[in-house]
Image (cartoon, rainbow, N blue to C red):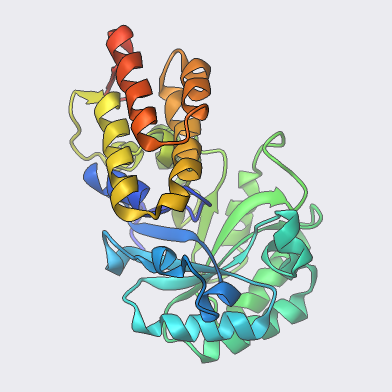
Length: 316
């Protein structure tokens, strides 16, 4: 890896192609992760799986993330993905959503070193792709357990670990323990990426010296130009927020099924509107709409009535 490697996180309803295209339009990032893909749904031919498999705009930089509590589903899905161009396959061991945990997936894998190690060994046999894992500290604040867990994953063939340094039950009220990212980097030989509480391009750069890669999710939705800022790429002096928002809506229509439009638009604007002084007001107006055309009209009217809100500095 280069000294500074920046990754788009596998974030539900955010890391789809419309957002990836926005990021790419500002110069891109080093790797784009997919939304988490249910390995079971993928192998059973789920109705929407083709949308999750879309690896554009940069297939060579794309990472498919799989989630499941079933070893065979994960192994078969990883093998199935051999036919698609990508930079690697990632196993989700960090999601703490109750439905995922009850099914044995996500962070539930961290409850047993042996079970997780055995699963990785099985998946490793069926894929030639770079195999990585995204995880949390675990169910308890126990670095020794985390280090032992990651050493086992490394021994079974994992080639990179991304740590979101919170426990399974911690939400965003507790700050991410970035010291654990640095400590883990010193305990294993494979690269360690860090993720959590990155609020600016300046912080992306600062954290990049503490790990092998920095992963962002919410910041990428709020400011898709953050990767460009962190990498020192040229940006317009002023960024037109209305143009970015409308471009996102256009690409949502082009690259996502109609059934996804409302949820993904509302999720994106929950973050993107943070660029505005009247963020909550605009979120509320957008939240009342169910059609993208109506959302576009809300945005156009808001910026027409509040022209001072339309532009932000390319250095922000």
